[in-house]
Amino acid sequence: MIKSLKREIKIFFLMPKNIYLPLSIFGVIFVIFLVMGIGDSFNYASSFIASFITIFIISEGTFKEDYTNGYLEQKLCEGDQLNMTFYLASKWITNLIFVFAPIAFLSLVFQSQQISIKIYCVYIIMLSTIYFFFNLGSAISLKRNNSLNAILIIPLLIPFIILIKGIFVDGNLQSNIWYLFAYFVFSATFIFYTILKILKIQIR
Image (cartoon, rainbow, N blue to C red; front, side, top):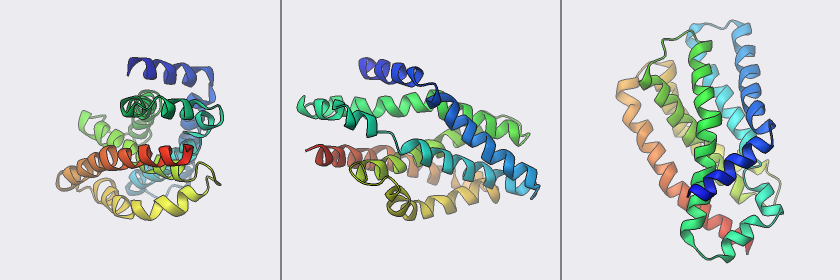
């Protein structure tokens, strides 16, 4: 696990765009909504939309480079299920630290909200859930046009989008937080497992 994580962090920092691109995209989209001045109640929705688009864009290249340079094939040839699990988990942890955590912080700062641990964690759980779903689309369309992400995955996220609306727009945090956590667990287990299986099929 440590070896995989070190590799992902090294790759992340060797390509500076991995750091500034997601934050730049999120910042630009969010500022556009703020400039429009639709209202304070829309700030939460704009945060979700900005996050949604940002993660959609960065997820398109999640596996592409590793597939092109043969690294994924190498991992498959090793025949160790645990290695592939560590590979995917390391990608998530790297993005969690260097992308999701800053985005969650910026969301609260831009909205001039009191930065509480609970709201901060809710943002990160939301971002992680979207990340796993879009990675599923990236795995499915690995050999095809990655624009298939939107067609294949967005319909699966409709219940999640409704849930997020209830939390951030309607303000029903307490009544929906466990549903959000359940959605995250589903994405981090079943969707995670499905990504592993699809990557194996794609590489063969």
